[in-house]
Length: 182
Image (tube, rainbow, N blue to C red; front, side):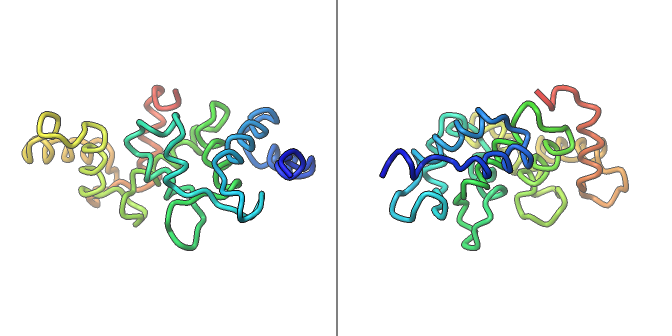
């Protein structure tokens, strides 16, 4: 059963190449990795991989946004962060070196929008900062430091002065930051 059922059909491979920023080799490697994570009971193409299994990947293990990444890329009706193979390809494509700044910034915005309301408000920014600095007593900012930092972020980013950062404002800030694409 192993060899033929886990092989990616050529027509799908071509379609995935057209729809992603991934090369043929990257797609085949992604398929191999996904197949290794996959629960065989549900069949090779219908199965989803649980968020817990996806989070075991070395590339995500130490990422402070690993759970948000899974939730943003998951198309599961259960909202459980599980990934289909196509979800997995979308994730890899968005993080690939070939992805455009617009794609990268779009997904970064969605990952940082913790409440999924389409804006980055003070609560989202606080969670973002805490994710980056760690939430231990040694690394956590004081309430005053956090307030000042959020105020500074909004001062720089909130062009329409509505108290939040929307996607276009976020992309404007990112466009001025060449380090973002690395």
